[in-house]
Length: 144
Image 1 (cartoon, rainbow, N blue to C red):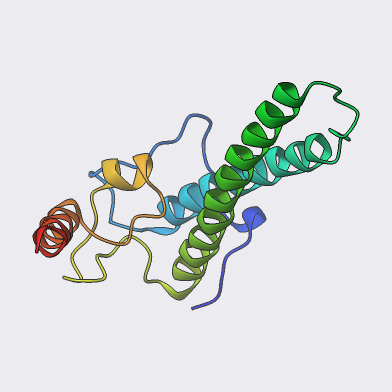
Image 2: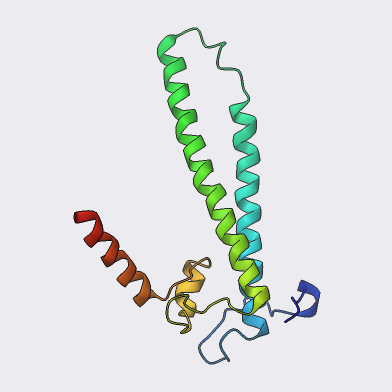
């Protein structure tokens, strides 16, 4: 299936996918594509801001406590950026699934993932039920 570009699909202002439409019709795919791309752009903008903040010289801080506090803040920021890097990978994977016609379907059951779940978590790959089973299983193995 060919990937559709933004210019091929028009979305009315305020469009939100509904259960009254065919699941993952071209409009819904375009809605989620735009949502994912906007999310990715926002993360990249924040990352650029973080990089410029991290490049400021902390060696100029005379107080050892100030320097230690700044180092701790930087470590937290880098950890957050690492999580966001992983999220960008998930976003890119979701965009690929849209192009391949697999987006919106549970990897485990093949059933549609609810539109509400996709709207809240557009990178979701499991239905809510499958996600809950997965988390219960993780908890059981973690407790062993």
